[in-house]
Image (cartoon, rainbow, N blue to C red):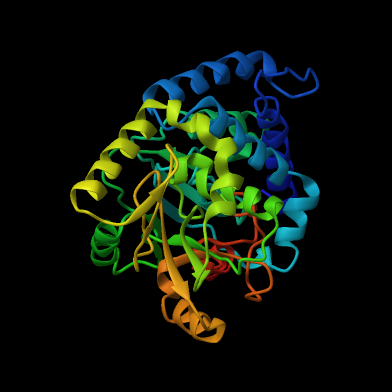
Length: 352
């Protein structure tokens, strides 16, 4: 199969996905195979939401909209234009996926197939409904993908390379288990925001999207704030208040109540507004419904600290602080070339 054929297939998949990226699915009669797949995918969306309480319809729609916008000819060609795809010798690449946000493993799935390899997918039990259905659609629009996509619930075996995502504990297991294979092993990372106190209300409101989208469960969610000495959080709390309906979600509310009780019983100092807490803490990974913060008084020292801790950090959100910074409100809108952990997965796949 030629690269252009693979690109065309994913463009068609993007057009299929786009129909489900709003509150109410809207059928586009020009989308191929809708008569076979449209109603079935509506059912899979319902199953995904019922199976995982964190996968609300709003968050699933957000993920689908993001992928519909990415799977266009312009985006795909811009992403791939600098690579030489002619050097690929097709291999079987295993992907072990996380399940913290909807379709979190789709970029790896796309990368393996678009580069000309075959894929063996082991999904998280938390996110098992959407991708197999989309893979079946992909096989219909491009029959040459049949036989190139396999899903398994068993131990992955007989593969040539692996991309595995998990916690810090499972990453150590992955490194041992896959030590004889070419691999990308990902573990826990978190994202941070560097504030100066000069942010506009619009910037802080945009930051709330980085904090609350997917309930803060993603590695691109901001879980830690660095603020200058003397910073007051009044403007921050005012800017995030429009997210207050999040407390009506039972799973979120349970986490909020539990973590608040722990902090109060431990007599930790923290600030809260009825649905979100901030606590001074040197850690990067904060619990649900909480962000940690840390004061700084020298930006150069802070840059050195973040460079030292870069293996723990996925994104840095700021305005004018870092050359690799991400604008407020954009952590959950990565481009295809924004690789997790800054590891170029296409370069890796072309090397095996």
